[in-house]
Amino acid sequence: MRTLVLAEHNNIELNPQTLNTVTCAKALGSVDILVAGKNCGDVAQACAEIEGVQTVLIADDVMLAHALAETLAPLLVSLAEHYDAILAPATSIGKNVLPRVAAVLDVQQISDICEVVNENTFKRPIYAGNAIQTVQSRDAKKIITVRTTTFEPANPTGGSATLKNIDKVDTPQLSTFVGAELSTSDRPDLASSAVIVSGGRGLGSVENFALLETLADILGGAIGASRAAVDAGFATNDHQIGQTGKVVAPDLYIAVGISGAIQHLAGMKDSRTIVAINSDPDAPIFKIADYGLVADLFDVLPELAQALKQ
Amino acid sequence: MKVLVAIKRVVDFNVKIRVRSDGSGVDTAGVKMSMNPFDEIAVEEAVRLKEAGTVSEIIAVSIGPAQCKDTLRTALAMGADQGIHIETEADLEPLAIAKILQDTAHKEDPDMIFLGKQAIDDDANQTAQMLAALLNWGQGTFASHIDFTEGAAQVVREIDGGLETIKLNLPCVISTDLRLNEPRYASLPNIMKAKKKPIQTVALEDLGLDTTPHLNVLAVEEPAQRKAGQILSSVQDLADKIKEAV
Ligand SMILES: Cc1cc2nc3c(=O)[nH]c(=O)nc-3n(C[C@H](O)[C@H](O)[C@H](O)COP(=O)(O)OP(=O)(O)OC[C@H]3O[C@@H](n4cnc5c(N)ncnc54)[C@H](O)[C@@H]3O)c2cc1C
Image (cartoon, rainbow over all chains, first blue to last red; front, side):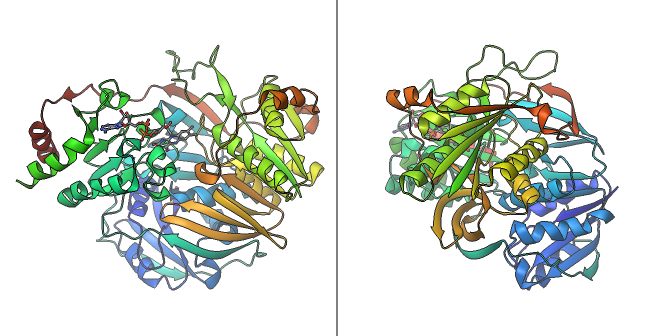
């Protein structure tokens, strides 16, 4: 099979979730990558170095600067005849763009796959990960988004793909990019961080939520949040972990003041080690935590920071 | 403006689902069903826009078995004006739903279509985008705020890096995210009033659309379960375990 992976990037850097998607694509066949953007040459170069990638297609145009679905989807559709499968990470871009491609091609997309059984058959979580569905596609072409936490990243070096410029596709302008308010942080990216310290409603306020930072600093981790913490304004939406937020699987996930609703567990239960700090001994989070401490988080956090520093 | 809102009847978000032991699917017999929470947000947004005078008419559409009428009644009690029930016992895929909604859009000619960003049963997150593609309209997915200015919708979207604002020509499709609003509970008088609002029922077969599944579901299994862990007795023990884990 010939596959095309949509690279996820911000025109400057390649999002590492692309590497996990490449690994998934390799399970199906040969891999080309599409880098669509504006002044995205560095990203294309980075893609060319990924081990096992054959060709990097570059579409560099101002219309593609912001990955708008209305301009990116027609480009992917125009390339589809050369490929048996098109894949993207199940990120906010992949989820936005690929169904638009699938509908035009009359293909039923397979969302968020966590396993390739064979070239027609895939596993994917449903019901917030409380069931795993095995689906066999009858479509000649596959359109797939990938749950990146379940695939190892491809080696980012050692490859020597051919670079090839392609033209954008003319489309009527249905949408315009107005602006973005992106969270900036020196912390590791939530999706790929080895350690995540995550807070819930139990933190009680924005000020208290900042208590997690000390712990994250000591452990070199990222900060996550439950929906309740985001809804309450303790953290911004990009911190939300869960069924309808981000899916993460760090080496260590520390849940502080999080009850463990199924919608939250859906986003973190594949973490290697889970630690929970909660004052309620019956909180469901303890059913999946490897280590739990039943205590008031406001007592625990300062003491824990001290103990970890030693 | 006229708004179409698509709503799905799903297993209630509070239900702990059970996977059938023969691997044939999820047990839904006797289980509490509700409107998909994201679709409630879509209905609420339409109702607020009507209250603000931006929207003049709200049509709620639901596709599925007879009980979808209950889901439509909920939308009507929240403030939708009329319902369309496209009746079928078939388990339809997002692409098929998008084709049906495309057909409804051609007949009803709305200025906007609102859908929840994802259904909490199949977690596919596809229908809004597919519908926008089939209609060749713009799409404002994962919306957390919507404004209107001269013939365009300005949509703030929840994206992985934070928030993004885009402007869409009308007509457009919008998929709603959690922070767009907090849906109301229908009041008793409104529930009574909703009983008199019209629901039009159409048999799926009468639409003449190809909704055959593209996927075979071979199995539905329980995921691997985590082993129960250990409750520690001191912060020092916790610190030691954390040091081991990193
Ligand atoms: C459609 C839909 C989608 C959803 N998607 C998501 C999602 O993606 N992610 C997500 O997280 N949720 C999601 N939810 C929400 C989910 O159902 C829960 O409501 C949410 O996860 C609860 O967040 P929480 O654990 O922070 O709050 P709560 O459930 O209120 O838990 C707070 C916890 O803090 C503990 N606590 C309080 N004070 C202290 C203290 N001083 N010390 C120690 N512990 C303390 C309490 O014992 C409690 O267990 C979704 C819900 C719906 C309906």
